[in-house]
Length: 198
Image (cartoon, rainbow, N blue to C red):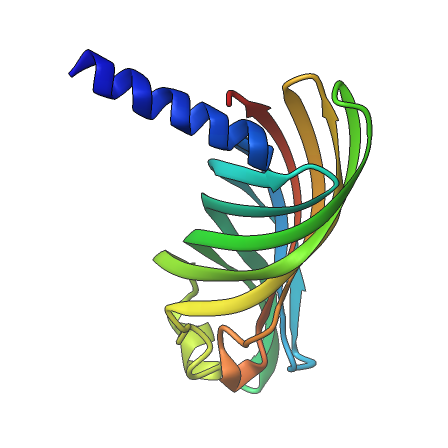
């Protein structure tokens, strides 16, 4: 049994070396807002988090699949008529999502100090939808809180690797609308710190 395990381990390490395979963890902050196609609704940024795993295959040109949990959403200011008066009221929507980007990238530099550019598609699945919207808002803007369970998007950005640590800055945009009734799409800035352990 030990001999079999050792053989598998050596084969895995050999494959990792040949394919320049890396595995790591990441965590960071997000700043997101949902675009809206209604002039009486203003969206502003909502801070969030991300934490998960990434793998990188390749050295110069590389492929980087990831899977991570994240929170995103938006703060909103709504204007509506109530008792013949214009009322302004705030609300908030926050999603907890499972995100799976597939990034293609190019790296430059040395093994201990490396710069990267990357871009690619991503899939997001909504695990939780937390809405802080009053009944007056729901009455004035029907279907505003009817969000899809999943979306497609893209990410693009740059990163730097120093020894086993990495820092990435990315922008995420929505390819599909999370709420078609109001043209809402995700707009997210990501700043993350990663650590490579393989």
